[in-house]
Image (cartoon, rainbow, N blue to C red; front, side):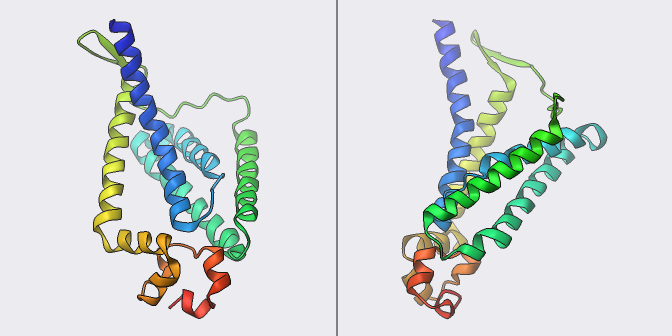
Length: 204
């Protein structure tokens, strides 16, 4: 019985990690209408930066730099590529993000080579045991982080002006634009909005 509960609890914590990945896909799609296939390689980029910098600056500073690096590359991809073809159909945009994913993954694979990169997490292979249930500490921490991020994101989307603007733009960009929401400041404008509305209206 303990083995079943252990596997169940471990599976729930692992599911929390997958939930974070899914939230990333859903948030991007709801805000921009683009299925971002490059998300996986961007996560790998952040992990790669953490692994390379951990030995020199420590784990937590490396985490901050890794997050910043992944966010910077994502912003560059959006500004230099996605926004330039925003009027294209969703299939074309999805293929573009897939191409970015392949490019980043290829370059990262070459950079990593045959090395086994350790990100230097301070908890290592430690295990948490409670009432006979043993779960890897890394999964417990990941589950806790997932809960915090989900709660923070839900609060931001529902309670902040930015969240209301983003939900309005995702639901009906035309009406949101008429109500004074600057769509380009909330998220890149979806292709079908730009096709039906002039640029001046979308940016008003």
